[in-house]
Image 1 (cartoon, rainbow, N blue to C red):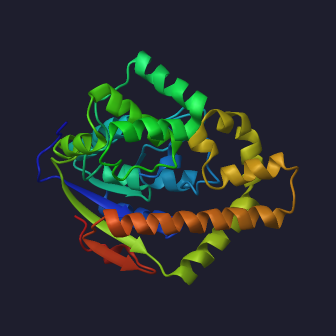
Image 2 (image 1 turned 90 degrees about the vertical axis):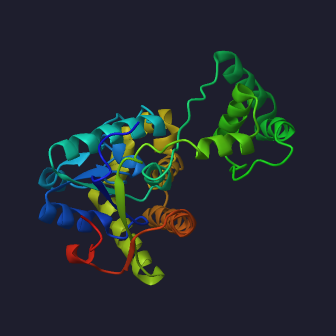
Amino acid sequence: MHIGPVSHIINILAGPTAVGKTALALEWATAHGAEIVNADALLFYRGMDIGTAKPSPEELARVPHWLINIRPVHQSYSIKEYVTDAQAAVADIIRRDKKVLIVGGSGFYLRSYFAPVVDDLEPSPTIRAEVQQLEAQGGLTAMLDRLDTLNPEGTRQLDRNNPRRVARALERCLISGQTLAALETDFAAKPGPFDAYVKRSVLLLRGNDDLHARVTARTKGMLDAGLVDEVRRLKSWLEENPAAGSSIGYRETLAWLDAGEAQHDELSEAIQLSTRRLIAKQRKWFRNQFTPDLIIEGDADASALTVFQ
């Protein structure tokens, strides 16, 4: 789907968790009359406020934001829905002669601005039931065995430890009758959902010591602000939506509550450790999958975002 002439620009501010994207984005958006489109996976959910470091109500009121607080916690939100909603948001902002600023650290959502991320392969009820039965009987090993039979040349970059992704890959092979390699080649030839726009991107980074100190301070701030009470309030809904319930800050707090509320310091340390691991994964993704127009390390103000227009 192409919306808008190539003269229109999408500005993208990316970076790992706790690097300082929100403050910098608000400063630039305020100065340039921009509107912000969210590209962080957990900000979609209403009520998940403290543990996601969601912009405050005052910050959300200061600059128009899109794709934040659009789903109740118990409802999933697919990448296909995200792409459709983001296309509509970008088109609406540009139609009103405002600047677009995408802000986030979730690689899958950021990638959608540069390349196709969803296809039209939807499994029939029969195929979905077949894969579900295979998983129920033999687990991940059985699904991988079947997938390897269909892909004698290998399973490409598939995360073979992720049951959901393995199940989806198996469904796609069964639907299409093609290998993952052939599907990947066909998919790469598809137009991206935002090919009609020029992209300007900035990657915000910090050194380990600086970033880890920010993670420590942020975790303490979340706990002081009432993260445990937030998780208690959302507990039943978080358990209905694995994507939300398994997210950092929430899964550790759920486990802590289920264990009978051990040492408060243990919860803080668990969240910090998970956050540091996430940051390492995000850095790897940015290093291998993201080619920004500008990299900024450390503190910066809006004047440093020289490639944005």
